[in-house]
Image (cartoon, rainbow, N blue to C red; front, side, top):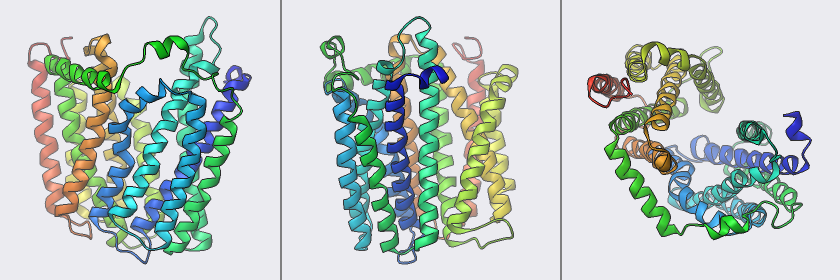
Length: 427
């Protein structure tokens, strides 16, 4: 990292990312606050479903086609212009918040912001090789640059969200106050644009060779279809993607239930907090569960196999639902959040590895694009279904039991696939 930070181009691109993602964290926190915790509004399951759609769908549906344009336009210009346009769009959302606008109109405006952000993030990733030393050992340095940049960017977004919560504690939680917090998120975007403007227009690419090889949107679409056909022919990858689709569906329903419970059902219980402060504890529990999964999954997969381990984690998820989630109490729910995050991330790591090892190299990028779409669209679909059937308190014992039974059923089916020909276990 010291070697990376000695390179002026990397430092400038890193600063561009940190400022931009800090502002995005502030904006997302202000949007979540006004939807879930403004005393002037009621938090409905439909609002949460729309929120997930706004945050997740642009990354899945716009991402592959955004890359087509990123390979046509100067990336330095994309980062400058996207930050400026995003700042203007955030001001528009802030105006709607201040006027008390709710529902689809507010989320449509927020969708514009997150869609623009997709262009910004894609440009950052595509630009990185242009600011990293390309001498021998450049692959190792590029891996370090990716890990350092993306992790730091996620932390910057989290810190931005924390700053937004701090502002809320100081200025208040009315619609007007949340509008001011959203307006404050404009400044980091403008700072990011200013930092990016320091690059020469053509420094970050695309270079002439890349521009000559660019694909059209039609080419991208046909490429995704060929990737889908390839997955259908590779049973291990197909089974793994089907399994994680069901798991994500149940996990999304659990998350929406948790949000509603903290908003409309739970009361403070000692050190365990309800409402927005409690969701801070939920975020910490998710982070701990996700981190633990990264530590234990490699060894557990070697011991129990790439099918046995995720199947076992689904069984654990079912037990957590029945033992902890059904209690509808703050301490038990927080424990369930931690363990379900462990289950979800463990399953994802296993599926990632299965796709990487079973899918042919020439199809791998397209399959991961489809995987990303499945991952997020399934999540949003579950949130929409929940909006139609879940009580506004979030307390639904029947839903918890159905998720647990679903996990057990999928675990059984997936484990049986280990004995089938062309299985991951024999590969």
